[in-house]
Amino acid sequence: MLSEFIDLGLVKYSKSFDNWEDAVRASCETLIATDRITKEYEDAIVENIHTHGPYIVIVEGIAMPHSTQGGVGVNDTAIAFMKVDEPVYFDEEDRTRNAQLFFTLAAVDNEKHLENMTNLMDLLMNDEVVEDLKNTYSIEDLQKVAEKHSL
Image 1 (spheres, rainbow, N blue to C red):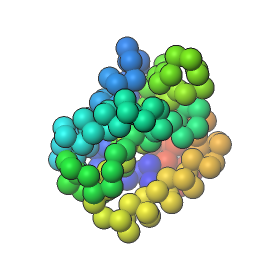
Image 2 (cartoon, helix red, strand yellow):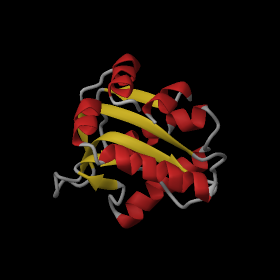
Image 3 (cartoon, rainbow, N blue to C red):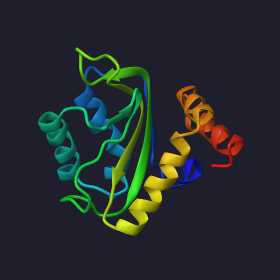
């Protein structure tokens, strides 16, 4: 799975962001650059977070930015990976609502989306992989983690 992110050009590294909205928008950049989503989908993700709160933070340190499956602005089913050196806080009153690892989801194909989600959840259930991902700072580092864990 990690090798697929690299091969498809869906990897981004950043040091920090001034706010969660900038981070979420940045997590969409590789999907936009590869024409898998449009700016409309990026805007929908941000709007949903403003409306529903930080639902994308699935556990402390990990976020899955996404909007409605098959939503406006989605051209292809894919997942992009972004790692941020400094945690991004989504709720100043609840500092556990933060993320350094972003897995941005786009889906037009339900079957492929479910397969992607299953593979991603398997990956995230492995604490060693998650810790290794948090300690990457480049695509080369990510490639080493992919090789180490056969991902």
